[in-house]
Amino acid sequence: MGDRARLDRRSLLVAAGGLAVAGIGVPVGLAATGDPPPVARGRRPISMAMHLHASFSEGVASYAAHLDQARRNAVDVIWWTDHDFRVAAHDHRRVVHFDGPEEAEGGLAWTWTESTEGALTASAADFVPAAADDPGRALRLTAAGAGILWYAGKAWNWTHTGNISDTTLYLDVLPETAGPDATLIVEIALSHHPAGAGRPAGQLVLRYRLGAATDTRHHADGRHGTVDLPAPAGAWRRHTLDLLSDVRRLWPDLVAGDNSLRGLRLGVQVAGGSRGAYVVDRLVFDRARRAGQAGEELRAEVLRGYAGAYPGVTRHRAYEVSMVRHLNWFGGDQTLPRFPSPPYRDNDVGATERMVEFLHDHGGVVCWNHPLDVERRESLARLLVERHALGVDLIEIGREPVDDHLWAYDVAARNAVPVTAVGVTDDHDGTDWRAGRDRHVTYVWAASTGRDDLVAALRAGQAWFTDLARYRGALDLEIGGRSAMGAVLTTDAGELTVRLRATDLPAGATLEVVTGAVDLAGVADPTPAIEIGQVPWRQLRQGWHDLPVSPGAGRYLRTQVRGRDGVIIGAGNPVWLLRQPPPRGIPPARRF
Picture 1 (cartoon, rainbow, N blue to C red):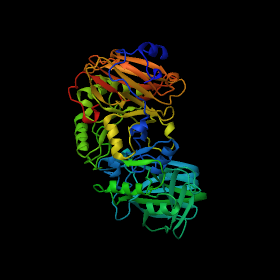
Picture 2: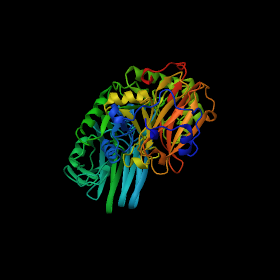
Picture 3: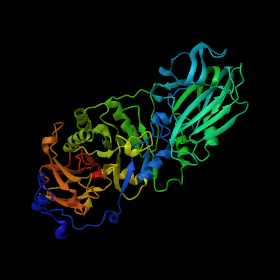
Picture 4: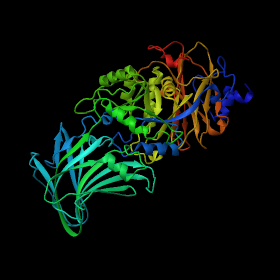
């Protein structure tokens, strides 16, 4: 190894502007002996968006929107982590009887909200006696002038939303005063899609217009599509709204099934001073293919519609398991767990641990999502140490507030709890990944973008996360010419040389070296036992530094990148240098 590749303690202190890391000594033992590029060792950095929601979840995003964002942001892999119970449409709304402004089904509320637009001279929404074959009430909407009286509906926790691929709506309608200038509108807000075929990017809107035409007609105007349906005045008629078929006809260039029934509202639209009056009853949501595993099969079918599209972006199906503390499940056989009714989330620690066991029994790795949603950093640290991170393999550390997540993560590290830190986007919109509050992609060192290679790298801790908009370089830790990030190394050497790899730091950024004692001190504040050294970006032109480290009674080391504004924009997983195996042993994937 040349002189440029070796730094003794004094030159490192000078080059780093005062680097101070506890345990640094003269490099001996397993010093790096060469500098082959990572690709030559059969690995390459692969970027992944690991937490995304599309048309089988509750947001506005389509799969196409996320694929477009991945291509625009040079992200190699997408994991589709739709909510499991939403894929299955478990306990989603089945019927609305219009019995009042709010009505329950299975203990879960449906709520109507009234609004107007335009210049109406009169409007009213009244609950009146229902159709003869539907006991209870119905809704009469009347409007006069020029505008629309809207009634927007929403189910508890968005349980009216969901993918439209198997969904047909039925609605009973009695037109009392109807005509070309007095129509009933049933508006369905669909998903956000990239631009295409004369259509700008944005959310699609499907409108059924009743009462204006004597035959069925379809018309698309950019992102807005209209289906005219005949509705003779004075007679009840049950109308069938075939969402999938109508989307196909209106926008033939789309994968029609890649749409969610995001929003629903009814309205009476009038023009030219006309008056309109319609009575509506019994809105039925018929989802034909969601029982058991059918929802997952349906999702796979929709995703096959993008086969061959967006080359360069690999996609893998996954789940966000949602009825306990949220868990992302990567790999495995995709078996849906059982769901409670009603679908209330259970934050009980034991329930989450049992779910982790279930998912492990079905293969793959499990990630603890947004761990601070029901914890503070101190209580999270306690669960990481005393409940061994609930048994998960991964944890979302790259999300706001990053500093608090890293604090708890360092508590786990000093107790030799090897759980892989990953980043998160948690994007439900698909409009602009860079604009999100949480915009951290995860990188792994892997031989390919194949699912098994990625899962193996995650299980081994060969991962780091970066701010999508601010840093896209590679991080690694090497000992003896071998990657050691995520590994647990037992050694009796007095000192080791750890090669710190960090490429493409932005101007003014600093590579920080975080080292701490592995003292099994429980949930004590880790800050006094941590030292942070700094290597400015100008000293990393070759992409690496050699750092001599004394393991002492046991140490861990990780790196992080801090931007010129002081914000952490990337962080890697640690290596543990121990005198003896930790109390729970060393997981096979992490043995050095």
